[in-house]
Image (cartoon, rainbow, N blue to C red):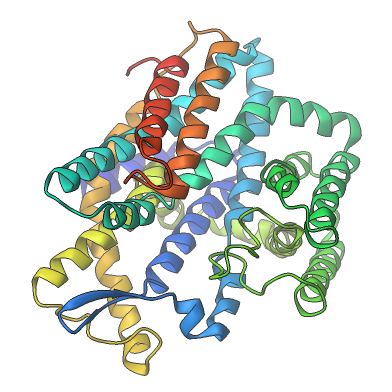
Length: 430
């Protein structure tokens, strides 16, 4: 397979100084998220129509699966490490903030814009075909679920050099300050029922988790026993918050959107991230030795070469398959979510989607890899930041409400225009 051979050539040229475990964790964390989304898909065929259910509502015990499948903290930690490396490289080259930021934004924005434009066109086609606005909103919200993460991560990238400076001067105190602010937001949320400040935890929680990557890069982690102790403390704290505190058990996708660990983020995500971090760091040296093997490292390189493509499009793919099965009289979709038959067919469902994802990734990922050679060095930092903030605001609205004019007519169009204009302001066409 040509793409495997290309990945193998790149893998063979990888310098020994590269921390391959970072790339491995990035690939694994995204694949776990994808499998988690496919696993809990609760769409089935009932009386000739598609029925929608929430697995966590049907089977509350399944909410504990999110303690395994909520691995976005791992991705942010990996992002912190990678951003620290790129910042250090930029400093050695004498590259300013604008030059550093240009490459990071281009890599993130290009695949994202393709997805959003595609779904804007599909939403328009559905509207012109007479589809109900609520159906359009339901479909597009589902397809755009992956984009919320990018809105937060792009803001994290904008702040990464400042947060790296913060870390270099205060060390773990900087993470403590971010954590303390997040705790204060939760106190306002639960003790005083003041909810609006809690939305700022999208910054404090994820920036604190992202800063753990700085600690990793600087090698300030302690030995295996200390890491396991910190991981155990974090897990104990998480259990205390859930079992004795007001926090829900689901770490993502809670059916109660008023009380969720993710919208807005709560300190439970911090505890989960610390637990995962300590545990994963214990295995760093053995895994780095394992990744010197060409086959495993080639697979890691291959997945990372199309990581944004498979992440952004995996739900769109599952929706396309559901649509095809619906047109085929619901073939294979007659099992009620949560039933024994439904669980037994999940491995087949996930394997089928995995096989179908390969050609989609091969088709779309060249754009992702091409975008890495792009740049916006001719654009000042303030323009890049302003454009990125416009894009993130548009993404936030679209991920929350989708297309379809709800809750306010024209909100979706305005949000989409924010995305397009923001991308045009911040990055140049490739």
